[in-house]
Length: 215
Image (tube, rainbow, N blue to C red; front, side):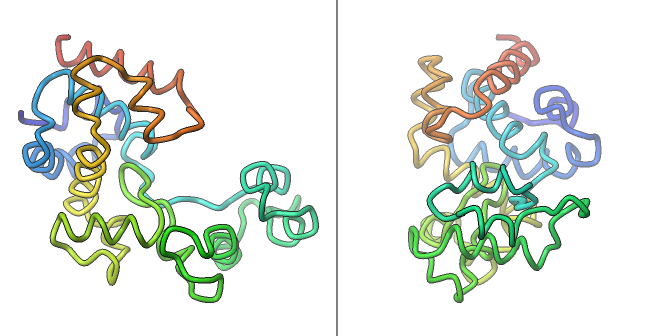
């Protein structure tokens, strides 16, 4: 199936520039990973549209206010630590250097990441169109797509071709074509985000994508 910029603007609610940037890479990735029916494509576009902020956010932000930082990472962020690293009342945003420290703390020693000093938390933060996270998941994707995104993780964040392939690999690796075939969209959401965050917004995107694809 050919994915046009116009389809991405409508189905993913993407800005024109991002739609143009991702149309050809997504067409190739969907062909490679058999996302090749209207039902599969509608579910895929709805989910990547949500995860990537309408194709505009391919790098996880750690710009958390103090209460949000504690709520998001309760096992790591005590009040004292959150006060030190979270967004201060005088700040418009958490400085990047401090966001990097947050990522290195909260993602340390998980799924192949090293300790906080290794820098893996920031290096392998949520990236791309499905927010792939952690060294182990980058490594799995790298083996399949044939691009060394462990050595070059910024490719997932900055290169549309790599981002599209990683998203396609995630989709097929988690059995999401089969769920799309049965119309079990909530089960797809659960495999992407077990907490079902944004479920209503994802369903709304799915309905829009289905309409755009004539389902």
